[in-house]
Length: 552
Ligand SMILES: Nc1nc2c(c(=O)[nH]1)N[C@H]1C(S)=C(S)[C@@H](COP(=O)(O)O)O[C@H]1N2
Ligand SMILES: [Mo]
Image (cartoon, rainbow, N blue to C red; front, side, top):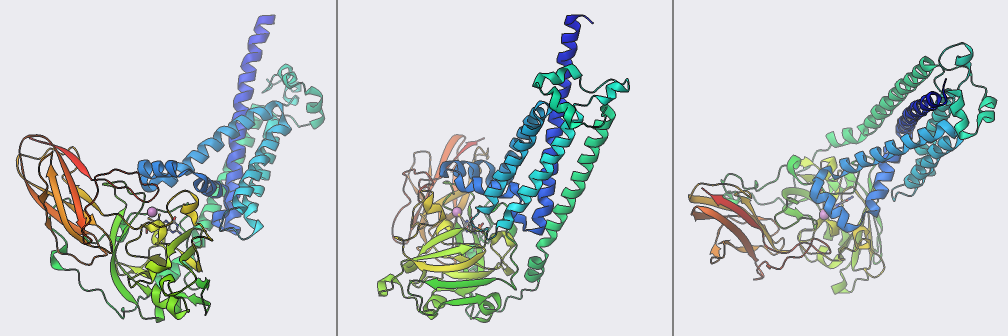
């Protein structure tokens, strides 16, 4: 063979070797994740490396990026994050696989290093209570590293050649790594192309089996929780909500329904895996400054208390002007102020030592609300039911907090398990640590639901309609403006309560051409929604919603 031919054959072999190395790396990564999934079923689902690393990533995401992610991916933001993590892992596994062809130990060590990263992420999650959370990452990485070591060993065999078969890897090329001697020491039995394919296929099949088993075990973990939810019978409330006034829901196509169905209710939280809490073992602890009688309550304890039923509109601070993160539901639960008073808590205005109530969830979220607001007579509650159902898991089963008038991140802790009375000076909650405001009453807002942006209605009468909210203050007036024209009063639908949003409509005599419709609301304190645009961070977006349409 000429020098040139040999060299070109050499390059081909290097590429083939690298390709098969990359494949080995992918298989090793796959095996590691599949094993981790199975082990996490034995530990707890949240300890799986992708979930832990994802959770750690969410906690470290700058507010602006989180906001951007919510805006662009909505509730899919977590799916996008998990896919992103998987893509990054796949790329790194690929690289490690190539490295392992020439530096076998380094490749495997790289896989182990990822195990360490996963283990650290898993054990440092706020809801992690045991070092066993490290197990899925560690065991997964050991299996992955072992598999990579084994497969890469087969890419460097010499016996096939002795048998006169074409070696998978040209022996000359193994000198590339300058490790011919150590290779010889490893004394692998012969591996030809078929041998590698059989090994790789077996590894892929075994990993798939292990992964599927892990997935299904993880899925069935929530069964006790699901069973406990099915068994919940919500008692009749001691204090029922008045029926929703007939005129509260306008019959105009395109307007958000007055009551938001549970399945349509927006969801915003940091949980990659929706916590599945078993109501029969769930407990809520109330403790801290000024708590004379510390208490631990079970779900049945709460069910036996007098319940209130209230319509409350919940809004997320991350909602842009005109955005979708607002919903209205009929909630049933225990009046939080009564529960606190029974524990001896008094609000700061009556000399109580605690001005902040910190709610903690089973997944480590912390949400701080002003004790003054919670105890000022409004219907702050520990909600057990939503629109006649036990809370859906995604909305906080078995129990969540709600404080009418405050954005969710300072009031609406889902999967709550602990209430601590403290001060704003002493403690910053999760979002406050990330530069959001300590206190955040919901800003007066209004939204045009119909016509939609860039709609092309016909000239003539066009119904402009939407919703407006100023929870706990109430909406007194909504006005619509066409282009730079005068503000025209919209017709308000009947008010349910001042804690709920209010629908409005305006019959517009539309003339052909392009037009901008703008809306503004005035709340019962007389304050009109400002035109000044502010971003969502630190305490909620302000500004007015506009929709541009072209009338035909
Ligand atoms: N445990 C927990 N509770 C939480 C959150 C969270 O991330 N974790 N997010 C809060 C925020 S920012 C909002 S706006 C509301 C949203 O409640 P929903 O998902 O039921 O609409 O839940 C609040 N409660
Ligand atoms: Mo929120």
